[in-house]
Each structure stands twice: as structure tokens, then as C-alpha cells.
Image (cartoon, rainbow, N blue to C red):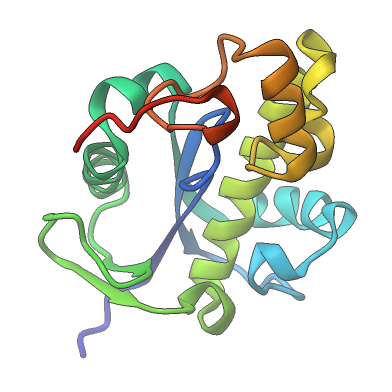
Length: 187
């Protein structure tokens, strides 16, 4: 192992049907107490940690709109996001949460790194807070979908809203939804 700093990388919004896919890379430059997987923290705690991470790190956040996810596909977005993080955060070792590098070299992966490695935890918090802030704005613009509650994921309430109102502009059109009686894209 060399002495390069570690850049933790994580994403938020990969499996949702509305809103952006957000990726973050974080190189911690100071101590931040209370870091863990963003999904295990309350919204209030994530919001409190966000400025502390920003103040104590070099970071880069990449966002792909629902339209861009539809155009490129999730894997190509993740590939492009990893390259963007490598371009902006250099002279570091990269660790991405999960088990795939999406074809990008010089990246290590670790399943559940967001709960084991501080830099990846910090990246998961930056990605999730960035995405949640965006989806809250969408909730005000499209209140009938309840985005503030489910953050664009395929909950029962979200499916019921889709059945009643169809998609809005921030929904991913390539994600097939049974309640809309859509055929699969690929057979």
C-alpha cells in the first residue's frame, strides 16, 4: 500500500424511478465525527454532517438528471461519474462502494464500504443530501407524487401516484413501471 490519500466514492439514486443519480468522491483532510452509511443516519444528522464534510475535505459531486440517465443508462452514467471524480480528485487511491468499477481502471471496490470506510461514508452523505435536496425541490413543483416522502423510489404510494397521474418530467422513462402497464423495453 502506498501513502496516497484515499478518495471514497459512493452514489445515491441508482435504483429510484425519479430524480437524478448523484455521485460523490471525498478525500478527507480533517476529522469528522459520526460518519457512517448515509442510509443509517437520520435526515437531520446527514444535513448536520454535510457542511462538516465540505469543510474537512476535497470533494467532487457529479449529478446525472433523469433525462441523462434515460439517455445514457445507469452503467454509463456511473462510468462517466467515476471518470469525472478521477479527473477532479487526483493523486489519490480510489475506493468505490459496491462490487463493480463500471470499466474504470485504478478503482478498488468494497461491498458495504459506505459503512466501513470514513471517506466512503462521507461520500455517501454528500451524494444522498445533494440528491434529497433536489428531490425536495421537485416535491414542491410536483406535489401530487409525494417525492418528499419516498425520494423518488418505487414505494406503494409512489406507484399509486404514477397510476393516477402518469409520469412527470423528472421521472425516468426507461424504468418500466407495472402500474402504467408498460411492456419491457427489451425482450
